[in-house]
Image (cartoon, rainbow, N blue to C red):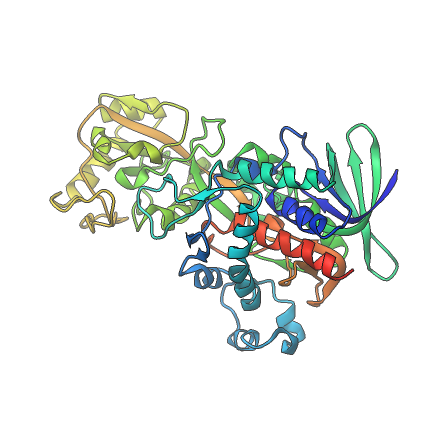
Length: 481
């Protein structure tokens, strides 16, 4: 079956819906493909709390652009850096094709956040600075009231009111490209109807590849078997959009061997069962040994780096060990999102037996840690207190208090995969660039499919990226009519 639209959007998260609404507001005929059902539409977006890196309703954080720039490449050639500080029209072939988030794209991103938030407010979305799971943090986070689900439903309702066609249980498979290399549409598959040929300009907004074990092993490595998506929506992100774009000549961007890591309880099946309480205890691996600084800084700024160290351990798992004094930390339960109970025992030996650690190992580790803890007079649970261990390797930099008041408790922690870092390269209009750095006609991308980050995630920017560049893609298609 063949159908023709002005715009065909693959993906029904906030990125795809933003593109669809923006285009439909300009009078274009739009189709949105969603591989899930209507009830489950929205992918990852439906499940996220949708933190936004903003200090006010109309202002991004002070470090928004600098943090993105610092994590947009590794060991950049200084000649290219200098070149990219100039206008895009003067860049060399090599600079245009670099797999990085370039300065122009970063500034465009930051500049268009406020108007995008105002656009969403016009659809009835409310925003507020609500409590987060981070007991200590370096910067505020704006949230949509109702989280990502509220964004998905507001955008989807607007799209429906504008006559956007939704094709559920429909998966994009391959781009339709003519003899001149121009994208004309895409081939898709519906669960009951079979193959569909959907003609029109294409916006790929179908996420990364965290739900595809083969691509995870290919890009992130065989140890990725110890990772799992942070929520049910992640299983729908299987990388077809990236692969079909590569087949058509698209350029890569971002770190393909990495992902956004978040510490979660592997026993839980709820969305994002995060465990952020570890700065107030010790982390031990399956050998019962510490392996990292549990508290190098505020938890919002350092949890990803700590979680990566957990992933490196045997079977990709660790345990946070706490005593009853964790309850002295104000609102400590905010940092524990799992629906599973703590593992508890009256003695460290009994706790170690419950979690399967070698006999005597946990007691020895905690004894060494306790001996290295300073006097506790300066303990300040909700700010960096400098209460560091002395003569212990690895060091613990803050909140170092003896673990001695039973019953003792533990939570298992693995690294979840919130989204993969590698994806497609785009320009500020959302156009996908080819391997020579030139815009590919009729092909756009938005959201997590856009390769953005290296080494460390710039927290609370992913949802914003999807919203901003989804909207920009839809508007650029309308402008180009």
